[in-house]
Length: 489
Ligand code: BES
Ligand code: MN
Ligand code: ZN
Image 1 (cartoon, protein in one colour):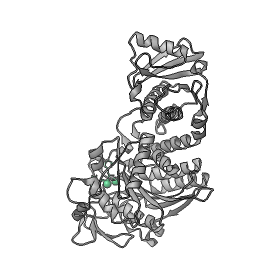
Image 2 (cartoon, rainbow, N blue to C red):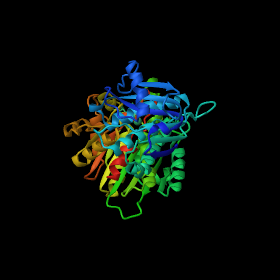
Image 3 (cartoon, rainbow, N blue to C red):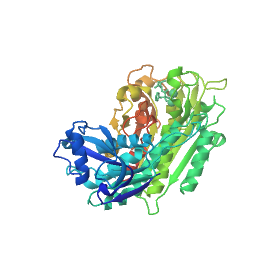
Image 4 (cartoon, rainbow, N blue to C red):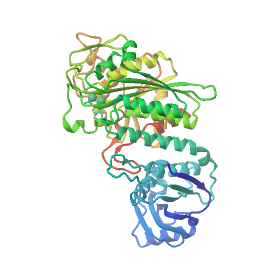
């Protein structure tokens, strides 16, 4: 990660590759350092740049800045409509521009506005540029990663103490976001259950997080029959991992995070078609979020006890696969009729949620790329949240707002449970109708939660088919930042 510096100087003293200068539209508004605002105003007067939200203009060797090769004007739009998230995203878009140019030493002028709290503005600006600093090149023939070396934030006299105090948590959150992107972008040929477990073990050791890995033998002993059934068609055998983070001081709360870790989802015998399989290496995003968040908790010393449970499997068709019509005895003892092997995530989670409930924590939150229906409902920029503990749900939604990672509540509809009745078992794994697929999946999970305070997050915002603001193409890495925000509150 780039070296971050925060100074109360004005940006005109910057020397390096590029100085990013955020500007509000409306001429009188910008209270930029004089030399810089002169340049910005000039370009605005020539009306080549209106400072519309996300508008970007590069200037070569600008006047008035000591020794910056480039200045990058980035529009924030109307000051009256500004939010932290808009700042984060506009500066993120500028960051992506710089990264692609190969610029490595970055200066950043903190947006001057009296509408928002200065400290929060500084934090959002830094996050924007740091989140953009990502390049997945591991699988290129000649990997030459474009990454920033140094980022210097200039606050023009504003107090920098809060942003400095927050730097550890900002870096932990951004690092976790990038870790999730790396894991979910990595092909399933390289990241299968055992490989994920080995990586988790290395990271846990390095960050002093407790870890327990259950191999197939231990899973059979522990009654994780659904995890085993989903994985039985693959030559890559399943694993369940339990991670434990304990803060140094006695924690006030205990939270369990549960992650779906389907390293590849072919659909199994209920095989997906080619195009629907293209992105299924990312069906372990929930597990990646849980692992990355636990590491970040240790880095930022979050004052809550956090346990992570992830179920890692490959869902494949073969002679040994589980089959439509099979009845599984889940860890809870409830039996499940499998009518579609592509509804595999809920089967894995059934065992994990029952395991999580046994730990009797204060809250359980599961994260899963569970349904295409949630994507249909919300699009790929918003994830769905379900839960009956409305206070918990609202806290999660608030953290989504705080971090600019969009969450939206969807209802648990008791009536829809009827559609999951099986003729031969206690429940079946599909409802038999396309309508409300994200809700019926959540209703299925609810049967296996033996705990009062639970929320389920259907990760429709986990994969982006296009580059947007600080988000790169592919895995978005959303999750750890809102989880950290919630856990730290
Ligand atoms: N992993 C998929 C859900 C998914 C699909 C996430 C596309 C992101 C993009 C999940 O395992 C799945 O296949 N769900 C089925 C459920 C259906 C068989 C009831 C789906 O959504 O089609
Ligand atoms: Mn599936
Ligand atoms: Zn899946």
